[in-house]
Image (cartoon, rainbow, N blue to C red; front, side, top):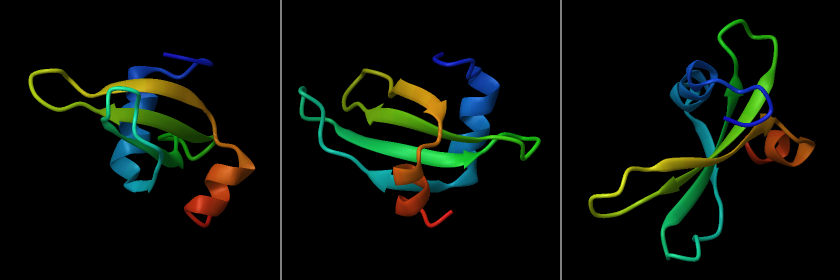
Length: 76
């Protein structure tokens, strides 16, 4: 993952359940940005996911500490 984000952190952020809509990918797939705290509540992360259709798996294309823009989008 990116910027020190592990799969465990990403999964926890996604389970947190806060997200906002992004533009579609070049392939036309929906993209969303999840925002949430790590399991210790120390750091707020943003994880960008492309929701792939068909037989392809969804994939994380972005992971970093949450920006002020992401905080505003989910009101944190």
